[in-house]
Picture (cartoon, rainbow, N blue to C red):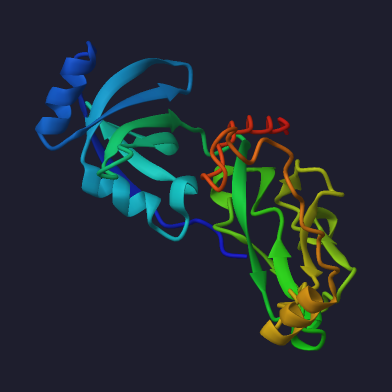
Length: 242
């Protein structure tokens, strides 16, 4: 269970809040519009370097990284609590930062990482399925783990790994329901594909349907041997709505 101790610097510049056009101008200038709030202070619109933000989001501790935020000559601890990506290009659009106090506990979500090879997969040929990928905990900022590792080597078919089975620490308080399933081993359902011989045999065994002779006027009066009069097309049956 690794603890997030690495500090990352975010250099923020104050910006004038405005419309969407103002935010676009910030982005066209190579920055990301953001808002800093928390610690009893008023929310402050700022702009950030996208490279610094991306480095933090893609680090080992990710969005749970404790940042050293510099703003107007002051430095404070902060965390990235929300972010938005442009859906097509994938570029960052907006960031929310929250000032934090290192002596006050936080509620954060921490990813669950499964370790080992489940016995139900190795010996029984099943598939390991992870149901829960993140657990909510409460702890001090300095004690936030980058992930919580769970050993699944003992998992066999029919046994479930739950939140109550995750490794515990006195520094962490789990808020997610202890009975919540985390992972289990499921069996592989084999799909039976019919061979051409089986299809042919089944078709041969099926009783042939009797030929249906449609009733209708077949000959035109006064013209023996003439072509049969065309039948009135039948109305197609209405399909039953499912």
